[in-house]
Length: 626
Image (cartoon, rainbow, N blue to C red; front, side, top):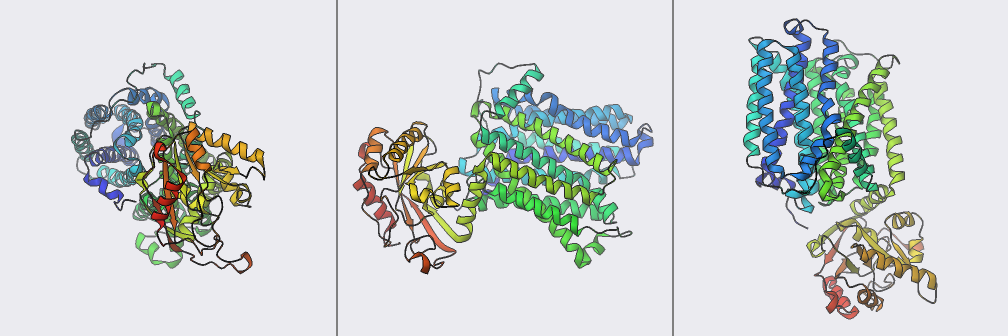
């Protein structure tokens, strides 16, 4: 596998200008939103003397309202038209919006400033489908996880920076509004200049006819989500994350003041911890997933969100301190449990969200991918509104505390996770596979590029252990349907993984002809659907560590359903816990945490294929490394 890092994308024009464009946009949104909130709270009399609580809640609603109204409409634009031009127009619109903001501050006109906030929400609504729709076009498949991780990191860092900078700019005593508008204008212009360097991303649906009925198009976008069950449940998982994350993020200021008794510096520090955690978890995803869309990280993230959300409840003090500074908070050893909880909630949130975004991009149909993202944005907005309503009810009429809200959210997260993983067992299956290849073994892969990214293909390997399908399937970027001996298929626990991974049980004709015939039918279906078929031509697991003669059944498969055959050699696995080197009652965890290798050779064209040639290729790849 390539040794390049996700950070190498920062040196490439196809990514860096886009990264800066979207990051500056998120930064600007949060500067203005938080500056306006601070102005309404602390300078309300100068802005009309309105009821500030009502206006702040109205401003939150105005920013999110365009996501409900216009996501479906602009999802169509993102699919129909070339994306780099759309990005430049959106950034130019941002400059115009910031000029209106300057006028609003000059006139002390609250309605105009609230209208500006609505326009910023509209701009974000237009940009959202383009933002996630363009990534699969400008990045290679193996860069998708790393690219999404950088985007999520940049977005949350921008949120943090804007959250801190907005009130600071609004608090400058001399002509404070002009500092806010000047900063927003400067950031908008910088974003537009970066957008000029965003590379072209061609239209994916140039013949699309725009449906101007936002209500019928919204329903249509929701239906797009339902075309693929995995995509639908991934979207629901993402929206749930925004429900969970918004609950924690929004409550941190009140938590720092009313529960911990801290000042504004402590609030900023805790916000920074949470966002640093999400950024760290996002960036770790590429390394932990081996540069592929690894949905096995999603259950791992969900488990962490629940565990550390629960622990934050138990770690919270019963009564707040008085006038606690950030220095005093961090000096007290017992508070480091709260620090660890917030940081780890963020880290596991990164593990949870990045693979889901990458999965939605990878498995959505390219010609309406942006409209899927638009539907996702609608649901995200809905879930965040519901989160706000739930928080208001829990902290208001119910009379509960912020730690109680954290406890309820953590329990709900466990319930939602169990529900989603029950609907789509693939998530849990991939988690178990991920645990296997990242705890018991350390896997090195060479020749991954020899496996075609699309079309039917057969991967064929020597058979060393009971977990060979899990190791190969866990490392190959495309889902693999393995043909395996039906008795291995029935092994407890592994059976769940094999069944969920759509493995194909097979038996000898003399043993069970019905199982054999069903296996051949499934093999043809897999290849006819342009999927990956995995086989072990030896027919059984080696008992002496050596490669056994390859059976000719694979020649029949290739003759009836021509497809390239990619030879694979599993190396250094002999003697491990799951091999047959020792009898079961004497087996020890030999080579636990050992380094094993997956060596992938060049594909053999179907016209040149034979079982003998395949066997020779696998033997050559393996060499003397059993």
